[in-house]
Length: 117
Image 1 (tube, rainbow, N blue to C red):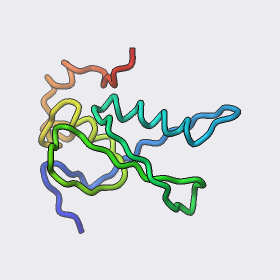
Image 2: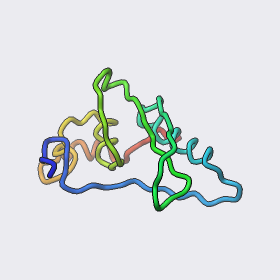
Image 3: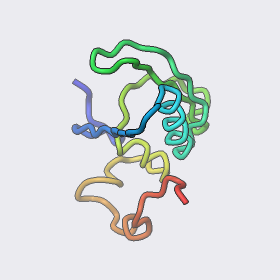
């Protein structure tokens, strides 16, 4: 079992999306994901075909974030907390969630902006 640290919670929150339109392709999904991740500062994405029993076609996404430099990271899934921590440069998840949250952070950043204008 994974040990809880200052950057991990026991809970895991996923981000999901849905777009409905005629003529959508996998390329459209890749464009949406590139736009989403670029707003989090991750612009170097690689897409790889993958097997997933619930979706077809499926793919994995690999990215590079400048703040990690040459550190190797392997991971899966996407939480709401981790991109928020990266975006607002929060090192300790307890500064974002829980009873010890600095309400000044919440008051200063009433809305989480992803660069949407």
